[in-house]
Length: 395
Image (cartoon, rainbow, N blue to C red; front, side, top):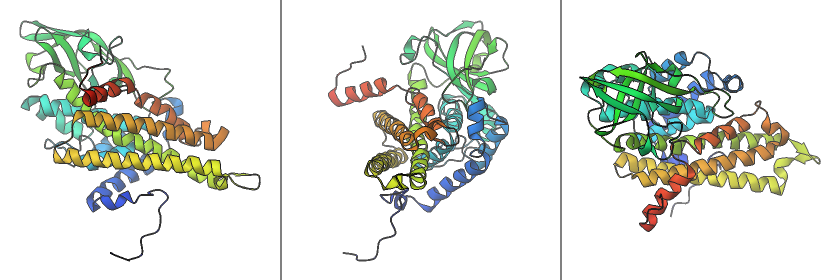
């Protein structure tokens, strides 16, 4: 038995999880953290308040230069990094803001992954290199105004007209939609659900931005309107039919959320811990009171458990053994617990907790959306319920 002196206790890493990361993984994390600290953190509260990101194309190019766009994909200008490195990047991005992680997630795990996994060689060569560099922005059109958790009931249709395809329909709650150069749009056809690579300059395509949001305000969210959008025959993704296509992309993005939500939780936890040490009541810092300590301990405990779960799932993904149900497990737990951490942090800050001078209310509001998108709590619960019991309760 070794008797060496253990390292000092780190309040930000109570279980010493950093010991499980390689030097390369830590280096990726640090590079993303530095970019966020310089390029995002000083401005993001203002972006959230105004509902816009200044110079979003410039920021996207900087993210591309760093290598985080489609970073877990191989070839075509993509960095080819591990799932663990991608997860750590998502955590750092969302520690700044969920909207920033959404931009990267939709770009890499939805739009780029769809083309990379299911596209033709011509589609990959045309779109993936500029998307990896941040020179082209992508979006992913699946959700519709009346169709959320049941994508098989989508009403957007694509019909053949000679050698062309003609698309009609609407998509809703589309991240990056109004700034995208290319949209991956899923539609019903006589051959089943198919995916289409749609340049946003195509006549009949428009993407009005959705306003009046109280969540993900530092993110572009749009409707996609497809009014007789005519596409050539080679616009269709050739390698997939049915829901397998979009669901495979969602599984990639959900994995990033497993990690990303923890970033919002960490930021809020650190803000609460710092505030509790500085705020005095009844002649002492509130961090010295039992009820506040109980909150901080519970928050730290759930963050640590979520971090261990995320890392375990990442190792499985890198080993090729990660199942979709396990991604559901991670998304359900980590977003739910991260939201509770943010809510508890808000109570520690008291009235200051609702001010954008602190990150907590922004993260809390953002996670209300993250809780719902790319699979609601109900859907992930039913997926796991079916996996555990063998009984489907969806209908």
